[in-house]
Image: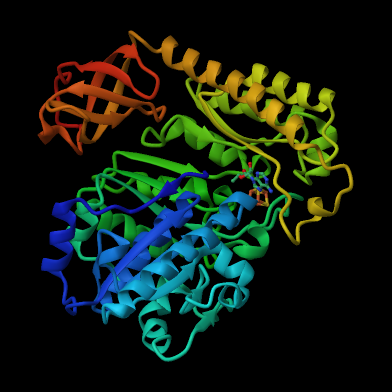
Amino acid sequence: MGKTVKPTATPEYASLVTAGSDATPGKRVYVKSYGCQMNVYDATRMLDVAEASGYSEASTPEDASVIILNTCHIREKASEKVYSELGKLRLLKEEKRRAGEAVQIVVAGCVAQAEGGEIIRRQSAVDLVVGPQNYHRLGDLLARADRTALVDTDFPEEDKFDHLPAPPKERIAARGVTAFVTVQEGCDKFCAFCVVPYTRGAEVSRSTQGILDEVRRSVDAGVREVTLIGQNVNAYRDRGTGLSLARLVEEIARLDGVSRIRYTTSHPRDMDDDLIAAHRDIDKLMPYLHLPVQAGSDRILAAMNRKHTARDYLDLVQRLRKSRPDLALSSDFIVGFPGESDADFEATLALIDAVGFAGSFSFKYSARPGTPAAQLSEQVSEPVKQDRLARLQQRLEEQRRSFNTSMVGAVVDVLFEKPGRYPGQIIGKSPYLQAVVVEAPEDLIGKVRPVRLLSNATNSMGGEILPVPEPSGGRA
Ligand code: 5AD
Ligand code: SF4
């Protein structure tokens, strides 16, 4: 979370897009995306919609006739970034107008959903505000926004997934060998700090059929790893058949060509026995689970409305590890939730020590308008939050490093994803989401190979590919 992710086009990608589409000259779209994987996914689908309406992808905002900011509302900083970015885009728009070129500025994503028309009142250069459930109408909205600024943030009757165009195969291929697939959106949990239930609305699952079709299309285009994403993904339930996430994973694992499956983000309360067993029974389901706990003090967990205790979480981790002994875990943490005392914070550190996380994301509590926690009186001061965050992150970083160090010498399967930083290198991921660099030819990209891990640097591990055991036919 928190980092800016731009679905960048490699030069090859850009030319593929232009060559393979019916793009209208001068109609060029640029998307800048902030926040979580859901936004990364939505950004790619917005490009699909725009392409179907005659746009090609621009590689810079300067080169675009439509600039979309796909925004994140989760913390104050993320939200405020939008307005400073819009200030810069206004200048660009004016400059282009003087040069006789029209530019449309679009705000999409969760700030769009939360603030709607207020965005246009604060920044009149914005032409269109479109919510996360409405971007399938982007082509039509852009045409209409040519005349007057528009806001479309209603939760529509129709399901956007029924209206999103399937991208051409070469476009999927250009995005690489791993893909996100949204299976569920929205959240019914109402954690006291979180805006998601308000911005993304109630939990809605996509149809199993639609998901399987998308995975099949992805695999046809060379994708080998799919990450099923949703704000509360383990609450997935097909609306017609009631099929659960565990069964969905099983269905996807049956598809030839799928080498790996992951899913994120899960709530501890929705981790049912079936899903726990799936980690034991389904080889293609990777032994790495992002399972946010947020805090380790029961008092704070209750105030957060998490609906579980620290003991519940520890018991769950134990059951998961019994099912899949090598399971690695990651979590999100919030420090400085209103009323958090030193003792509460120590309880979070104790939970971290008890679990041992392979990776994590941690944040200072940020009061969000409209959420219950923002009304609480005992807000924690900024220096205290800062100090706790530094201590927490140090502990988590030690755990991440010691997890990686403990694996030096081990042999793990690596799915190679792209060329490495230096010539002759390629880079991929271990089952535990570690970045692994080896010296090997690029034709191994998209393949899984056994790798002996030899070293542990700050952000990646080094290794060497081992000969594929005979018979070798089973590997992708
Ligand atoms: N302040 C700080 N962090 C937050 N998160 C969600 N809402 C807030 C907030 N108001 C964090 C949680 C969540 C992750 C996506 O973002 O840790 O799991
Ligand atoms: Fe927000 Fe809690 Fe729902 Fe996660 S589970 S999206 S933190 S309300």
